[in-house]
Amino acid sequence: MLKYLKSITFAFTFCAVTGPVLAEKLGLGRVALPAEVAAWDWDINALGEGLPSGSGDALVGEEIFAEKCAACHGDFAEGIDNWPKLAGGADTLDYEDPLKTVGSYWPHLTTAYDYIKRSMPYGNAGSLTDDEVYAIVAYILYSNDLIDDDFVLSDENFMEFEMPNAAGFVVDDRAEAEYRIWSGAPCMKNCKDSVEITMRALVLDVTPDLEAPAEAVTPVAAVTPEPEPEAESAAIDLELAAAGKKLFKKCKSCHQVGESAKNKSGPVLNGVVNHAAGSVDGFRYSKAMKAVAEGGLIWTEDELALFLNKPKAYLKGTKMSFAGLRKAADQFAVIEYLKTFTK
Image (cartoon, helix red, strand yellow):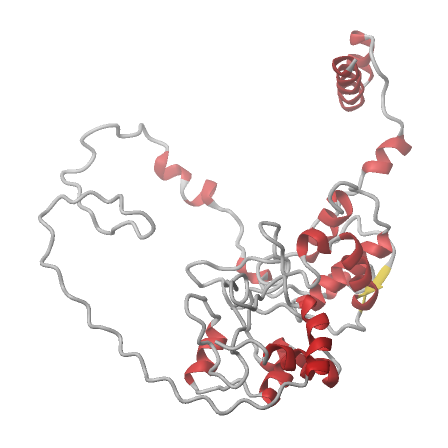
C-alpha cells in the first residue's frame, strides 16, 4: 500500500509539473490548478519579491519562539546541542573557527523569512502565519542585538533593513575570470619539476616527513601568576539565592555550575563572582572578552549586574546571545546564586 501511495504521489507531482501532454500520455494524475500552485508558491527572493503583507515585533516573537522554536534553537536563539545557533558570532568571521549565524553571516534577511515560512517549525512546516513569521524574524534580529524589542518589522520596512554581512558576498564570476585558464587538456603526470611541502596540516598530523626532523626545541614554560588571596566571603542570602536558582534556568543551556560543570557554548561559572574576567581554563573567549580581561576587569557584583542587564550593550562583540535581565532584583538574585559556587 505504501508503494502504491508513493507511486500515485509521484505521478501527480510529475504530471503537474510537466503539463497536460505527459499527463495524457501516462494516464495518471492531472495538471495542478492555479490555486493549488499558489498555496505552495512561497518563493521570496533577495529583492523582496513575494513578501506577504504582515508585521510583528520581537516581544510577540519571543513568545512564539519560546513555544515553537526554543526546543531546538534555545530560548535566546543560542542553539542547543547540534541544532543551529541563530544569534551571536558578531565580528568572528575572520576567526579560524567563525560562528556563522543569521546576524553575523547571512547577507539577506529575506532568506530568513523564506526559510522559516517554508520549513519551520520542525515537524510542522508551513503552519506559521505570515505575522508569526515576521515576529520570529524580528526576535532573531533582536537576539543578534540588531533592533530594539519594540521595533515592528513588516513588509513595508523589511527591505530597508541591511544585514551586517550584506557586503561580505561577491558575485561568482569564475566562469568569466577563471574557467578559460583551465579550458585546455589537464596535466595528469610530471606536471612540475619538483614538489615541496610548504605548509603542514593543523588539525591532523598527516603531513609526511620528507626530511629528518629538526632538533626539538623545549618550549619555555608559561609563567602562572600566583593566585590572589580570596577575600573572606560574605554570608549568602539563601532566599535570594533560591530565587536566583530559578532564574538561572535561562542560563543553563549555555553555562554550567557545580562540581561536575563543564564548558559548553559558555564558560563554567563556578567562582565567577569577584574573580578576573576571561579566566576559565579551556574556554575560547571572544576577542572583546579577551581585551577587557587583559585590561584587568574583575567580575564584581556591580559589574556582573551591568553585564546581565544587557550583555551586548555592556560588551560589544561578546559571543553571549542572551538578551539580558532587565530587573535589578533578578540580576542580583542570579549573582547571589552564583556566589554559592566557589572554584
